[in-house]
Image 1 (cartoon, rainbow, N blue to C red):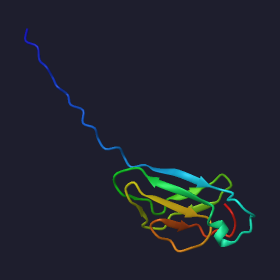
Image 2 (cartoon, rainbow, N blue to C red; image 1 turned 90 degrees about the vertical axis):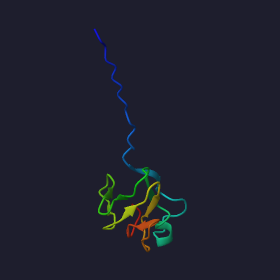
Image 3 (tube, rainbow, N blue to C red; image 1 turned 120 degrees about the horizontal axis):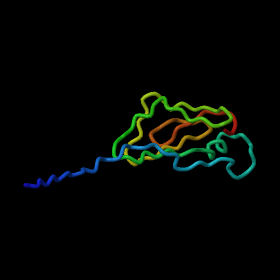
Length: 105
């Protein structure tokens, strides 16, 4: 009887890019003055752990209290990049986004 040897090669596929909460800073130190500069010291950092940019425009961040933030339409997070979402107001760019909340989230 002739035996056959089959070699099956498993190729490692690149892991799908994941968007993860990298850091959450809530209740920043100091008095809760509600000033925009103090509100912006409260933030979350998202990280794209993959090797490809991800389109995350219109994705939502929400908490158990019902606060919601929607990522800007068309926003892309580059490979191995971070973006910080601040509670207060400011000018959005590729590194920092602003919730526009008038009080702490």
